[in-house]
Length: 634
Ligand code: ATP
Ligand code: MG
Image (cartoon, rainbow, N blue to C red; front, side, top):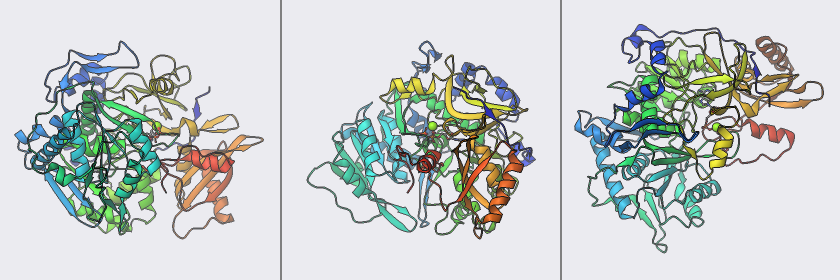
């Protein structure tokens, strides 16, 4: 199969960090750090030294059974100990670890010491419920401190957690619980959403009728709405009741470096979500290191990752990463535009957020309302910004840079996946930035763009994005599906090379530009074109805030582009604008980008983690079955 792609869009703008940022960087020499990272074993071993081990590893990397790699072989460690316990011996003891804020303006703070006590109580309670090392505990919880406590409690006793995103419907919820034979479910009465309270307990009640392995359901009183507890089954208990009288102390379970840590599903953008298994030590070292390198975490930081804990971003960079670095992590329950499109900026101002990590979808959404909202708030506490989830269109990057970062905050465009666990391709704050490029592979990561034979593609061409050497936070398998693990990720290219499923190109400076998903490539008159460049060309027109493109079959060209566009308030897609957009896109991309049809829409099908699902647009357009849409946003 052919995998090369064409390069149509060139972005020439470059932005460098100001002296204020540079002065406080841990890594001031980007090239040198990348050079050090070329000896991957040495690099990651040095990073691993910074944690507390019960027993040090015998071997850094075992690659004798590719692609089933092992890291820090025979090392013994506990991640919850490293994320919480060790800080209470330091002057971070009374520092806020978790700052919870919701759309109603309610807040709750837990210091490291309070978090430690809470985790221990809940961990003791789980043990009393018969949970042992290796058992699976599932959660169906909103963004709340108890979710963080629950996951840390699992990690502390060696139970494997499997978070079900709280927006999923009964069917996908049941499927996930039964897939991993969860013994315990932790849920809540409800969640706050746009001024309403969504009843979670009812969904979970319905699901539990079909989940025979769940012995106990723990219910958090989060919103305070009245709910019915089922007396009959005897398997439901309130969180508060459960932890009452539990000791606030507990020895951390000694875990092997390769013991399973959690199971988590991918977003389902390109097909049925895949259950990814992560293990303990490598994940811990990879996540903490990349967060520290990319966001330069410091004393006094207030870190805010807007991703949900139901997805990998929340696992790695809302919960574990920031706590492993001993910083304060903000967890926000609410939408970016409720009660108004200034909601997030109000949070930044009120609490003095220093590092903000979000998604292109949120930025594009907020762009619709113009620059007015960010300008109403004092955002001067912000130092570094970041994005993840999709390619960021250069125009969205510029909007974020100017209106939120006030041209002072570097934007870290981080490319990574549920499978990679940690950031993989991303700038460090010292890097000269080009809007829309994730820049380089991080120190300790060996990424490249190759053709179907596995040869690097030349500048001016795109191809498959691959990772050529193992990395510590890599997933170890797809849960219950070794075959799929091998076939999906390790067979596309000769040699033991990880194929990410994305296409990319590198420019003359070696910067990576993600062009989109391999599955979404457009095939026009012998050219293969990634979706992101075409969509970015649309978004760079002042009338367009968001665009998604698919290939539509054409008797002459093979395919032509069909674009779905969301326009800024006040614009209508009339003949004149259609002509103007066609001209604009042709000007930006050249004659290869043949436009077939432009359609104005109010919304695009997205996953609940905010990614455009082009396969849904394609299937609908062709009148085909849409496939698995369990993660489709309503
Ligand atoms: P599925 O694998 O089920 O189709 P998914 O790939 O969307 O879902 P995730 O693991 O949540 O599931 O997302 C990883 C993907 O997100 C990457 O493969 C890439 O396509 C996209 N992505 C993440 N960050 C970036 C980024 N900074 N730039 C471009 N694309 C990104
Ligand atoms: Mg994927």
